Length: 198
Ligand code: SF4
Image (cartoon, rainbow, N blue to C red; front, side, top):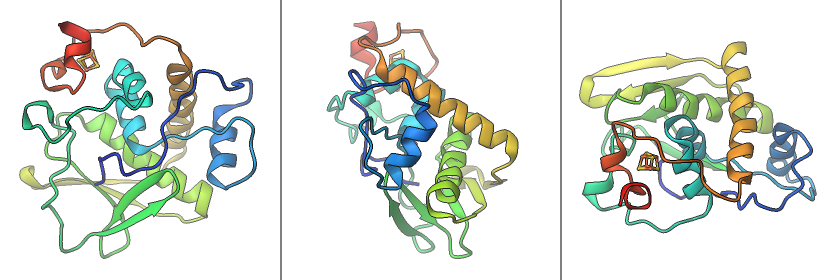
C-alpha cells in the first residue's frame, strides 16, 4: 500500500477557521467544492494519528526526512514487492491506494506489529471511497511475510472511529506546537527520533 508522500495533502492547519466540523470540511474539500477552510487527511496522517500524535504533527509540517534510509524505516513501511503483479494503483484526491485484481482495497504491511493504525488507515480509504466517490469496497489487510490476510469491512463502528479520528487529526495539526514526546517501542526507528530524544 502506498505509504509514501505521494498522497496529496497535508495540513498547515495553523490559521484556518476550525469552527466547522472537520469531517464536513474534509468532504467539501475532497469533492472540489469551494471552501474557505480546506482540510485534507492522507492515509499516512490517519496512520500516524494512531501511532504517535507528535509524529502526525511533524508530518503535517512537511518536515523533510530521508525516508529511504533503512535505519529510520520502521515496520509501517511498505514492502514494494508484495502483490506487485496484482496491484493497480489508484489516486483519488487525498488518498493513493492499491486494488487487488478482485477489486478489494489492499493495505500491505511488512508486519502485524501496528495492526490498529494499519486497520484505521485502510478503514479511512474505504470511508473516503464511499463518501467522496460513492464506491463501496471491502478491504484486505495483508502481511505477506507472515502469510496473513485479514478482511476489513467499513462497519458502522469503524465509520464512527474514522470520523472521530478525522476530528482528532484536525485538533492535532491545528496546534502551534507539537504534542509532547512520549517514549514508544518504535521511537528508535522513527524518522523524527532526533527531534524528540537528542
Ligand atoms: S520519536 Fe517517538 S515520540 Fe518522537 S515522533 Fe517518533 S514515535 Fe513519536
